[in-house]
Length: 343
Ligand SMILES: Cc1cc2nc3c(=O)[nH]c(=O)nc-3n(C[C@H](O)[C@H](O)[C@H](O)COP(=O)(O)OP(=O)(O)OC[C@H]3O[C@@H](n4cnc5c(N)ncnc54)[C@H](O)[C@@H]3O)c2cc1C
Figure 1: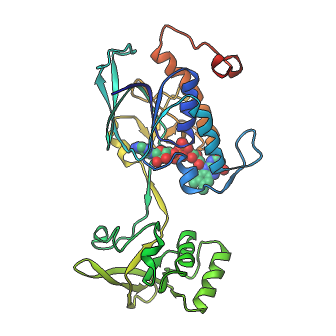
Figure 2: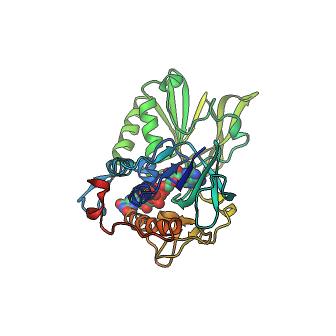
Figure 3: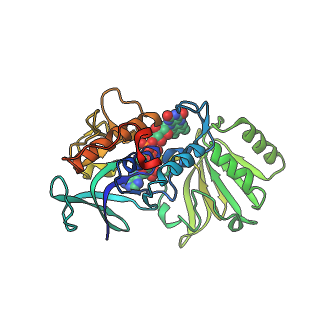
């Protein structure tokens, strides 16, 4: 069991840069993220897009930015815990007997066990990501067997009939890719207009002409048909005239995008404003002493949710954490060029 100077909750750009900024103050850090990789929204939602408003880069892809941030922060060896959902933060008796400003420490409760730190930086962005799920009876009983939100193994779909629902990029991309292995693909969408790349739509129309994809527009899936939870088809409802039809299929891929959730924050005993954590603009202190918030999850007047904003907040906050943990010392540098850390 180890006691860290700083526990960082969230491994998006603000969380990763916090590990660097705290590292510059010679503070030991641990980063938790619920996802299997670092990078937050940048990696999970738009890894290949160019970003144009990062100082010093005319443009940089989102994934390159994250790789650079990781390289910079990893020079201070933060510990990383991926697939770790932080459930809550509690004040805890100082079992390590290390000097702290207020005598106690924080217990970080994760689904995989408890961790301890003298201070906390919350950088959880818009919260945890998850697929938008259709509202269908007994949905969870088919998840992982007949119903998937993502495809990791094409083999499963070989020579099978697959229903894909949605009109965005992921729905169309999966329809195109799976049409190469599946017996038949049904693409179900509730309206004529699709919100995907026009080239993908063109490709779907070509595959529909060849009979590889059958379009069911304007329809929605309204019922999973099964025999003792072995799915054998879906009932669809016409979105306009409500007529119902049955299609035989073994697999169902709802592709309605990703949603994020910060509902769990209500139990963290922090002052919230607009579902965000209220902070002091100058220090990023929250309403709980020793706990800070940076990035998209932190709220103050005129706050802009930008990567750049999170970087500045992380730097401001790291200096205040140093003062909080070492009230009788001063940081030994002002500019990175003066620090012996990089020499
Ligand atoms: C399509 C798109 C394009 C964008 N383009 C730009 C742009 O051009 N320029 C720009 O500046 N900004 C852009 N943004 C916004 C930018 O991505 C965000 O401002 C930035 O990602 C916020 O960083 P963050 O570290 O605060 O949070 P996030 O990136 O949201 O990361 C938070 C992390 O915390 C994790 N987490 C949440 N709750 C928990 C928990 N309880 N336990 C463990 N882990 C948890 C999440 O899994 C996530 O990985 C764009 C956003 C999108 C969606």
